[in-house]
Length: 344
Image (cartoon, rainbow, N blue to C red; front, side):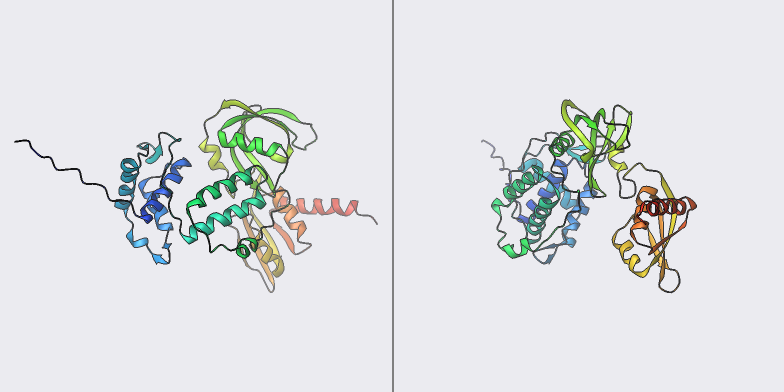
């Protein structure tokens, strides 16, 4: 008698919420984040509310492993695990997750408003690419709650210089995006004239109202920061380079530029200037405490002279430098130079 083998049990269709979670996994993999199971669980827990229902208690590492298994077996995702890095990655970045999730209201709001902000911060053609990508994602969703009034009532006043409309910007952006070498002619405005360099653009960032790249400079044989508005010519070369995580991690809110930093800078502030210091941070661990009636002591762990001296002068006497002596002297010198040039 022929033995009848039991049929393989069909997998249950993934829920809307599971697809939403798997989309988060795929997004991290596409960004080369190399997330561990623990990292993914943290990402799940950021999704605290889904249609006003608390869902944090539902998640565990078993949830993560079940989602990864579904990606592999139901959607044929080329996901692999790197034991050395202790994280997951894609073996084929051309793979697409062809199961669009129905986005929640909060997700659609974040997506549309993020694209709206990009319109005011990025120049063409980058902002059009972002807009097109959002349009593609929202094809299968229904953002009716995002009425015209809501979208247009969001105002983003980009800092002067943030939006660089020069033809150089998209070339530099594409070289950074594709990890390609970049040949540039750069003027550092120090008076020595432009120089031609070949650089590896590892980091693309906005700082002090200017778009910049942190790149490995083949001419100087070390990482350097370049202001994009000072790049006179740019050509993307066919050669590629591997991303350098050391350079990438070196760009933090407290370590953006390579200027010499002074430690434990102390400034006495009036009450009005204190509000400005709180709103315009120069260091993530800066502190402000009371220092007598109506005065405050502003303590900055580390800050370059090129940042803090103009900041002090801009406060029109409401910020008095106390320490270190080098900063006090730099403020005096800058103020004296200004006074000497004023008309009688």
